Length: 423
Ligand SMILES: Cc1cc2nc3c(=O)[nH]c(=O)nc-3n(C[C@H](O)[C@H](O)[C@H](O)COP(=O)(O)OP(=O)(O)OC[C@H]3O[C@@H](n4cnc5c(N)ncnc54)[C@H](O)[C@@H]3O)c2cc1C
Image (cartoon, rainbow, N blue to C red; front, side, top):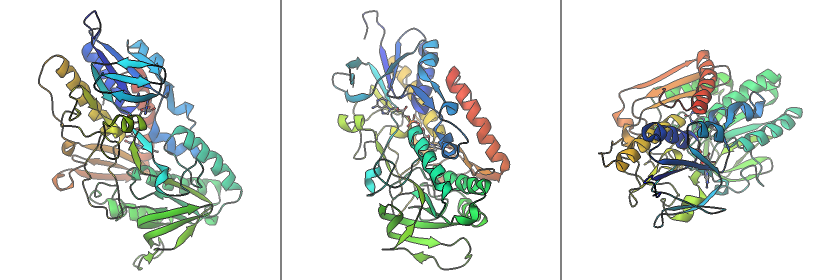
């Protein structure tokens, strides 16, 4: 606490969850307390549009803005530094150059992208591309340009333990569209590889009609798909499987082919790995065995009531079986909802008022799955409680693509100007 009676609220992470919470807290607290956002990146990036960067349809600059001016305009301090550790006893966020004392802390650090799960995976020393960060997406774009000079088989997907299946689906359908636009589709067999037990499972047990609609998209675009995949390793031009069942788009009622001990060749591959909590959280011992933070219904740490968490950094119980290993997806919309409740509950804690619960089993979801020049809008009232869902809506069509394009512009404007009270 400051000598003037002001308390310090520190937020680690200035993305979907952290930035939303910062603006909400400022709206509630005004000048009464200090709010600081600390992030190792100095820009907000609209991550859902990274799927378009490799094909040259977006640059990272077009889908991002600098954090400092937006935050400072609202009277929120921005610290551009990497957090190395949190000391919950001393109530200090440690950075490379010093420490930020806090009275209340919100952790919104998102994921660490864990390529170590499979030998040969990832753009840093491996043979596959990624679109999980802006840097990865740019690198995937350079590899894409090389690939187009001498095309061949493509593999897109997500490994065992992954959670971000939606982005992998979006990428494969956008890639298929990009190949058609480049006039080389007929030279490129495409295979989608996933740990999901059925197409359209998404790590949440699917949604009504999702399996049929996803399979229809695969058949319509002539993309083969591998289910229950456990990847053993990746070598320069092949993915080797411990297990997996290959479904051919052309064989409507055929038996899937067992891929155990077999491999598929590729000239270009983009495979999303599992996520862990970031190193600073794992170093601090605040997370579970995967580094995600277990919270109560108020998004509060179970041991430290002045520490809250929101977004991908929060641990969510898997809602549906997935024998090959799926983790739970946490979308941008869900990250925003968590952030709003966390911010509201930080204010209530500061003011000695009662807190507002939002169990994850009551989380709704709104999502657009883009597929190049078409897509699917997905809505459900309970994303993490399949048996309790009353609303499950999938609306396919070309306008879904244009909705995502519009939403990208709107969302960037909303976050740049701090209007997070808008939908
Ligand atoms: C390719 C891709 C496509 C996606 N598409 C969609 C989509 O279409 N729709 C959708 O709803 N969701 C989508 N998502 C998911 C969405 O991006 C996430 O839900 C959202 O980004 C989570 O927000 P967050 O704030 O929790 O974490 P993040 O957005 O990951 O942000 C975490 C922030 O914390 C900072 N940070 C981390 N560690 C430290 C540290 N030690 N010190 C300082 N700062 C730190 C990071 O720099 C970052 O700014 C997609 C994700 C990916 C990867």
